[in-house]
Picture: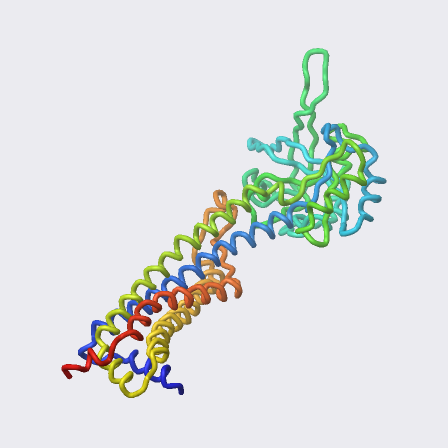
Length: 409
């Protein structure tokens, strides 16, 4: 064991007459531990929300969406879909129709978004239809004498009071013109499945039918509202969208998952930055405790320092002793904080310790996702702050004049 490290370790074991220093040292360790733990847990929550929202939003929607700039629908969409599906980085493409409708059952009614899809291609660009808790995907391709098939979200089914096999009335605001007025168009649909995405906005306001049924409901023969695409790298969405737009020709526009959710993910990034800055102040307070502890110890140990220097200890060694002492405090506090922080994050995620109102937050509980890289940079930052807090006291100790201190001993 090196001389400097040995002395630094000895100074951690304060004697009775140095109880005040021992208490402040313990407070410093707890301060570092609290700061590191709080930052790990806070970033785990931030990462958890980001991961859950990305998985649910990106899983439920396409990476890139192609639409007509004039919003007049995409005619002859099949050959265009097949041609664009062959572009580089595109892994799947599917046409769809989106419209707002009113679904009613008995005395209950609710406005929803109905999406007409090709079930076999839709599951390759979005996974909502793969999360069925009741019914089957094949039900969307079934035919009934007086109704079309419909898959609804679990919260929508609950609010309407319907189950698989029930029939609902779907009313489209795009009606037909009579000599007297415009009459809304309606059709009957049979519930063939209930999906559970875990995301309240989808479960409460979305419904799926097949593309043919949607075209009949909205009088859009051989027309699709959009063509959706899944790509192999979601972070290349901008460049791939440009290639799709160019291949589609004039009159088309694209939107990416980043554009559709820009405000949400920007808010999460800002929240992450604010979290780091505010909770990082705990580390600053812990650093002040380390600074005070080192200053008091230099004043308490000036005679020991003088003896060591008179026996041949160099200024660099004295500086190293007190610097190592401060770093030991930072290291112990950081290790305890990382262990406690990651432990709390695991417990919170595994046992769902903090429930949420899904209607407000879109998630049933607070998600935790502690990333190893976050722990690495938090530990390095805590040790760097601890090191900076020891610089001045350590330099002051190294510059003491042993002759003046020992003159009257």
